[in-house]
Image (spheres, rainbow, N blue to C red):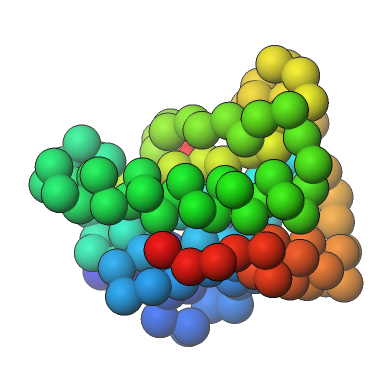
Length: 133
Ligand code: 5GP
């Protein structure tokens, strides 16, 4: 059975897409810790990120890097943090989280409630700043 992220990639479930190439897809986390919180996923369905091949993992990080640079351009921050958890959705993904302070990375923080227009505007701003890769 396809994961929820595979359904998102296939367009069967809507998402706020920020970037895509032939192997990877990036979209806004629906329960963001901060504005710009983005998920990067491989199109090949793999549960555990370390089950990706070395080449896939390296390429995923290069793709994530360029998404992170776009996030930082669209939402100025001290740095974009990276986190891998994956206990909720069994489809490998990297969280990219714009940080002003270390505690912005705490997954136990309350999540932001954003409306559709806000999600759309954030995704559009990151996508505009994204220069590919
Ligand atoms: P993890 O598996 O890394 O513990 O958490 C999965 C993340 O995916 C969570 O931050 C959650 O908010 C996000 N998420 C779960 N389902 C969906 C969904 O259907 N759409 C989007 N955009 N994000 C989701």
